[in-house]
Length: 349
Image (cartoon, rainbow, N blue to C red):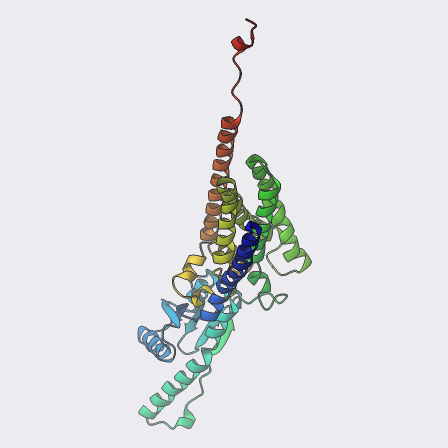
């Protein structure tokens, strides 16, 4: 009877767990809506205000604009990943976008060229009418779109960036599971982790850069990024397992898989995810690794300090938990070991 109850409980909980995983992965995509896409605008203050108001009428909250002095500054902001694109007004209007920052955002900014062309032509015709000139004398204005940081021709869809979270989430969890459940002592787990993270980073980089040639930055750069990512996720899970047992492993795996993966900003860009979850997801190893991979491969002048510190923080937390588990294990071992016998009691009466 007891076995039947246990079987029924597992049979009920398993599909509930499946549903939870499905909801976690589908929710960002089902509810995503583009908003607050950071965009630099080059032009006179009056022009910038007019553009912002006109775009807000068409799609409120779509863009989050900031001024830029000229086209060069706008492109620099894009290369530093401070904005996702730019609108350049003036005699030669232009839209700057970057497919390397993410195709969804890039397509939105790229497609602004058409409504901006219509607005520019409308303003030019209105100005001509005010001066009494015929519309036929007004030259047509076309806003061109320029990709200032394109994806590599060998990976035009950005597959390498989008799947870079898989070694962190799945690889980190598989490695943590093998380390946690095949080794009994926490000191052994620490040694295994120290070998697993760098070796895993090297092999994953070989697959991405050597086998499929998906990342243009090269083998060693990718190896460093993946080593940090795998170390961050696996150390966290192994550390919780060492400190809290099987429940700790489950907690760590759920944090990485159920929270870190859906909010990583690869399936749905962080600007598309409901606030504040898009920003929250950037503090998990999954998103930090994906962002670091993107910068290392396509944005060499962008700052990577935030991503590196996030990954180092996760590694530090995991190692602290693992160290605490080692101390706890030693105390339990000392407590369970038999007390030494008194030599005086061994002497014959």
